[in-house]
Image (cartoon, rainbow, N blue to C red):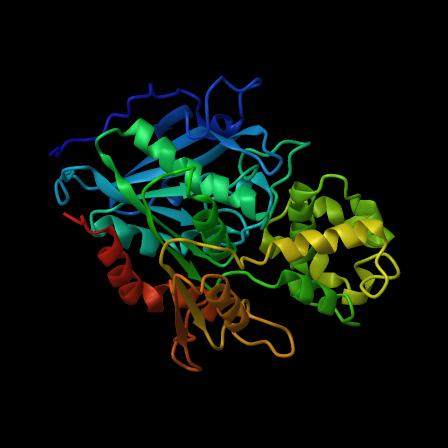
Length: 410
């Protein structure tokens, strides 16, 4: 057992500040999970409390299957309180919620001065709690978030892309800290990350061994119906901030989609450029997507008679719903009165419907477990609302569920 400070097997890189996130061109040879750069995290605003935080840039695989460099954080527990156990620390691969597509909003780059900062800060209490259990934590930024370039936009909610980020950072952690990061890991995510966790669990077999379970807190689901319903509203809504993010994700799945043919002239010319510049909160402002009526977002004909590019957009939205075959235990958590991700937003399907779909898809396994908190169960005094308060409220039950799965079977 080790009680000292970790020293990764890969030499620390001296790149300071955000230059660390700029991928080398060309990428060095290797396979997914190979570290490219690593250094101690020098951004206190991004650090998981109570742990030893490392910033990593590693090889992964993009939405189109091509090699990409993806950034993230690896945090190890305090060795004095938690000496490295035989076989290494169990690992939680954390999938974060929606922050936007602008590089500065990536969790490992956010220095507390962006519209995404409150959303990036909130889960660190949970992640610090995981370290307190003696578990290591890996936190992907996802593809092209933090590392994006002019021609490479974060493919928001593109399931395979997210899954590669969530899984490949597990491999990176094992390669950087051999003997200290063990073979057993779980994936946990919230909102966008809840959806990502389900996709990661689906893609894990044959890619990264050792997955014992997946937990999805208020996972994004059934996006197509939400976008189509919003396109019929004759009023403004801050939730239209998700439209450009979803289009960015659709482009990851189908680069042939032309945003100019999907969006109205006003939305394309005035608002679409904001997706590279603003956090999700910034996109919600009245001078951005929060200031356009729902029925002004898209070119004429949508959603009743979509053109070819809008129809391709719809197909990608439908593919984002995480109704998937999964072989490991799955725990889904949802608060009934969450206004961001709804349990049962009749007449549209919500998380209740997703759970029913997953249960049917995985019926031979019986591995889908649903923790639905009824109205009023999750305190509403959290500044970010019940959508985030659910994370804290669920922490004791989630921890117990994970502990049983991560325990050494011997």
